[in-house]
Length: 121
Image (tube, helix red, strand yellow):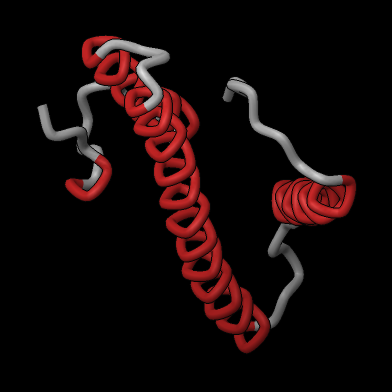
């Protein structure tokens, strides 16, 4: 994702760095994990924990997605009100925001962007 003039305080950056570090470490640990040698009970527990992990990850992803869209759209709207950009440029920037999300989701550009994040054009 590109940074289009966002600002953050040192505290916000540290929180962001910590979260990104935790997520990267979790991904690394999950990628290296192997179920060989576990009992049936342990295998079921792994399945259950991974299901809960998927749910937690989906919730965090949805929250981060919503915040990303809201922040970008607010900035575009303010630039439009301030007449820094044209209506056409605002539309392009909103579409660009959604395109960045689709790339972050590793989806094809035309595939199922949730309705609440689509631009009204």
